[in-house]
Image (cartoon, rainbow, N blue to C red; front, side, top):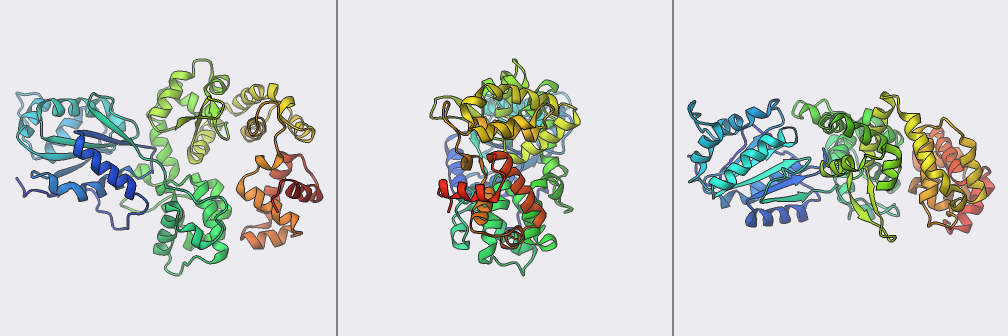
Length: 470
């Protein structure tokens, strides 16, 4: 056996970049490994589970005289191969006359080591069985697993890894961005990709827009930062709404499922049942938080169990209870974009949009002011998912019985455009100010007009004054 404290990676990559924004998670996970024999780090693909595990084992290796064994399971196709893969990594010989798990448990019974099982979600039952045997028969073995959903066995402690902290919508200065881990990661990786890159005062709103649009997801941010040299920051921000197609990697070290945002989402989607896939893609029509009642109205009356599974496997953000004591769910924007693509591929876009519109319609008259109501009614039948999403925003952005303040319907970038319009800037001047194209400015203004019902620039100026945007 090798000397105590050694980390055996089995060929798994060693990080070559700095570790940003995870000090609290690293500390908590280290603490949990001290008191729990099985800890599973869960979260959506690209949130940084593997990187966090790698950093934690470096800090804790000295606790384990028989070493830390880092085993990558992502390439395994058949769940039945899991015990053999682990035995091979640990140099445990297989006895043809004995079940593999029995041989593994006997070999590890007297060892004090940490077993790191990375990317378990596609072979979950086999990993759960293996861990159950080791917890029962190898008292000094601890397991750190990473997966998009927990193993679901007795003794497991789940640690949900959230995306990186985002900057405030009001953070438009470089100094203000420093408190955001997402912005700090983007800035460092962009400089790494292009040493000429420095953050100028005018760049802060663009960085804010990019990392917010990417939900603070580390993989997405790193892929985006790698595009700065080719596109420029303004060009990247201008195209970030098409992140699924824009953000890919040609690097040779990344696993296939991490080479693009689309591949990351597809890996999780393919692990769902057909029924769960249908619910997932239909829930993508919601532009923000939604209740279980709303989910059932759009995805079918039997959607409840699928919603629970989607939360469990990190395709929906864990629900939160609002001021009205109702539980609401949300989907990360990158996953939502993927879901909308699958919805269109399945030929279900208009059907799902109509279901959302039908659910929202009874709330229209008591929620919208006349201008907004006219804008919604003009959309008519056959609306797209995007149009239905805007309708849903209108009917959920205010309390029942109260007209929704138009400014509340706008994103931070759209409010910024309204402010510049109110200050008298032309479309060309706004484009130059925000480092985006004139076409993008026009597109934003069209969406603003649809949301607010205000067609003239004078009306938008009045809106900005009435709602204290300027």
